[in-house]
Amino acid sequence: MRSGAEVEFRDVSFSYKSGKPVLQGISFIARPGETVGIIGHTGSGKSTLVGLVPRFHQPQGAVLVNGHDVREVDLHSLRRTIGIIFQETFLFNASVRDNIAYGRPDADINTITAAAKAAQAHDFITKLKDGYDTEIGERGVTLSGGQAQRIAIARAILLNPSILIMDDATANVDAETERHIRETLREVSKNRTTFIIAHRMSSVAHADRVVVLDGGSIIEEGSPAELFDAGGTYRKMCDQQSGATQDFF
Image (tube, rainbow, N blue to C red; front, side, top):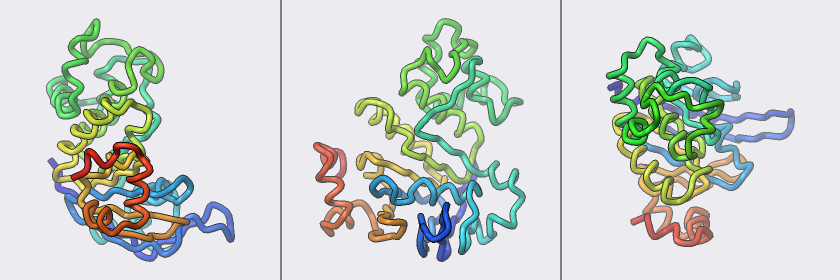
């Protein structure tokens, strides 16, 4: 397994349109192996921020991975070190095996199975009609939301990334499925630098650190316990989600 990478945001700003900044003066460092939750209300710049790491956008300021400005790194090499799990899971009209191995088509079945087990997907896959050879339909229409998301997680694991980005990855599943996926991700994120973008506060409850964005700027930063006790925006967002704090501490 790769060790996590250090990711630094150094005075980062970004605008989609001139004069309308989405991010303003963002500076923080995610250390190797650290899990960082990124929260904020809709439009606060969460997805845009993490999208700077794989160079989906070009910011003012600098984003550095292990001290190297991502703008000066070969794009293919950079993205090989990053696994991304989006809210909308894209699966192909192909077998489970091919979907998991999409980023590594040369992977053998043992490697694919190991990734599925790590994502807690192996058990349900073996119960499908043809196991790993089951055709799952365009966008995984034959699977539940939780099953599709676990296959997406297995795909990310198979890439063995140093950096793992989860962009609201559990938003479209029910609370019980979200809990199981959260447990999976806690195991998967070990030894990787992980960014978790979430609307559900329970998704970042076990992060090492949480960064709270508002209007494209950092307004709070600390451990979940520290921010909860501080009684600021993080605490208010927890309180707004009925029962969310029950899973916290």
